[in-house]
Image 1 (cartoon, rainbow, N blue to C red):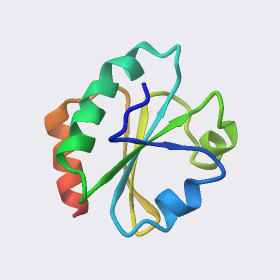
Image 2: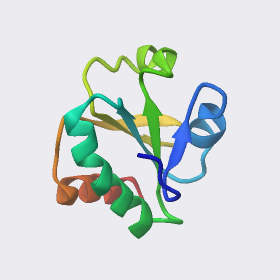
Image 3: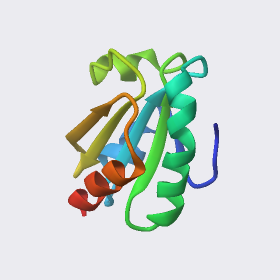
Length: 109
């Protein structure tokens, strides 16, 4: 699920990549065993490529970064958090359309 257009997040780089980012960030909380996560991953990769330079798309593997899941109260996956100026401004839990995600991303700009 790793892709050059997306950033892989963990405890060590979360602050620098998300909280201190000068661009809005869409963070995907996912797991290898999650079917819907695998279904939405290609959509997120497309958005990452299409919006490169204006929005950052990042991924958090919840099995490897449980502290981040707890910090943002992620109880179901996939959970997508939309950050602007280091703050969560929107959230989607579960599968959604590319059109819906693009609309939410545009609202961040």
